[in-house]
Length: 83
Length: 384
Image (cartoon, rainbow over all chains, first blue to last red; front, side, top):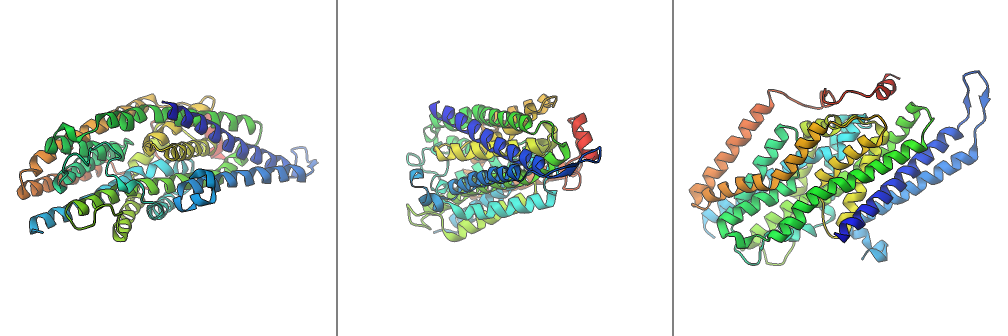
């Protein structure tokens, strides 16, 4: 039963973290782009928000790489504590 | 070795590969149903990707292949003949085809274990089955895994919608489409590493049991290749009926929900595998799709379909077991019995395939479903 609770906690945390990171990255990417508003005024781009977005996406990629390491046994040697 | 044994071994190998094929097309939906339903991937592209990743996955690990049933059958205490395995496989294939016909996602692993357990009980007695393992590896995970995955997907989807609140829905849909493709591919790869190995294990143990391979050795490279190819071809064929049920029949989902569902599925499968107990991919993916459906405000879940699915999960093991037991009772009569079982299996498969042609589901109409009405918000997005 303990194992199932561990899986539950890990699954909820990791899925929430990766989902939130991606959504946060997407929010910053969209908000960081310059646009023309409905009234014709120009909204400036926010480079800082775009950088935050790319950092979020990079973290998501890191999580995916870690998932690949978990899937491929030959890669387990890259992460000593997985053994 | 006499010719009769050689024929039975050849039939076990052929039947194992057919089971692997049905496993592939039954489980395409697990990885790709949401991507196809949301339009993140075109149906044909999705099944090509899933098939390729299943083939790659088959070559990545052979750890699971070392045991035929994960401890459910006491392989050390009873002598399991090739005829028992053949009977168990026939039981599992027939159940897989029946559930495919009605479009219900059921666990291929549970069907295989059920078929083998039924065959072993008839062939070698109840002492051949570890019933505690049946409870801990089949019954409890069947009840708990969809809840875990569903809760994970629900939390992820709730948070995602909170974060992207107020943004242009079309942009959000497009943004999540890319992420969903990646998470779906992760699920397909992890499926390939797990499921192809079951048949590798069956073929290897059959070869060992009949003295064609040294005891204690792993699957030979040709076994790995043919098993990988069989599951990949099955996946490529696409179990469109099950894809429709999971993608459109349970709930109406869009790309953020699909992303959340796939992320939750991949996480649950990988964490549980790493901790040493494999949950059914089918049950995990189904649970996460329901969770993602509930995670969006105002979204509906078709509880009628969900209920039928749960019933299918619960009866998969015993019904496949009954099929396996009946097949074994006939197969143990000798070579003639084995041939009769093979003919019954072929006849059952042909009848099921013929019935499926009355209401064909394919890549062209997989997303047509009247089970769940589109949500108004999704209609708005789709219209843009």
